Length: 490
Picture (cartoon, rainbow, N blue to C red):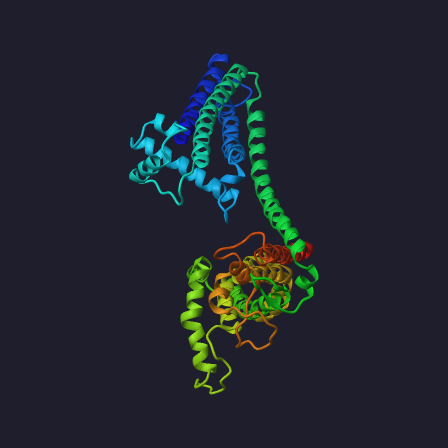
């Protein structure tokens, strides 16, 4: 039975449970809904949720755990002698899964029988030819240990799927029967349903938190592996970034951090004034018609993919800056030799951040009570004086928080700096030179053939964890400022 059919059956059982629970509750009250503790629909929801939720929970856990259990079991069946030189057990298991899927596909297309697929003594060459004739893709030659492991993988997967279907359907039926038997006019169905919804909301919040924890832990343990291979003093206090996969690398974060902060500062110098002025105009001066048109158009910038901004920087902004500041440019200063520069990335990133700053600032300025404006105008202040001396100071904590959130967004940007900032890690104050950032180096270190046992690859996790801590600190600081001063103006 396919997973989609299993889900449809669970949904059908839940629908049947809803109507049967509702009918049973009404029948227990003699058809008079006023005698029920809760509305009739709550009794139906109780049966439906008791049918569906425990079964879905077991299904999700089973789908997550079964592949890991099968992989661990089958991996132990492959002897060390069967692992080719230059390979590892993980690559062998990938081939085992590929052969198992190939056997499933060949059986499904009737290119071979189930008995042939399960035969441990099958002729390897004939089996390989049958799989290729069936259109199955194999990346390396099948060996006897891989074939036996693939057959065991298929067997365990099939048996596990059947057991999963039986357990899930049995749990759904038991849940439906349990909730149906409990249904009567005195049963507090509304309380039970609301507690169930509360549990779902708590689960959703927990998933978000646990995902963050999982991301941090995955980077943390790989970072520990990196510091076992490379000096933490060189990473945090060195001055050179020079990875060399043949050994002798210098992996200091400081040049990358300098490039990241430099580009982010230029981006904020572009985004903050423009975004803040746009927010002041839209919230204080623009008419309703103008605001209804200008605000959506401004926020369209937030929906443009960052790769498009990168292309814009590479094809338009960079050449325009070279034509102005390069050799033979309009100004004749010869400062800029290439379109890849800190200034190029900073300008385009600033354009990307404009709607971020303007939208948040606009919401914050609009949250300032109208009574404060009226009081200022009533005392004789002009419109501009009210905005400068009353509204903006009242909204300043929120605006600062919006700027810090934009800064954290700038620090974590990748595609624009990959395409516009260059790949040179160095300390320099010249905005017309090429530099690189932390995110760019993370992409570079994890691109291509990588050895996850080398410091040159593991350094990407140390860079990622450091960047995570920086952006998290900026976000926490921004939320602290907003929450600390918000009540003064409410």
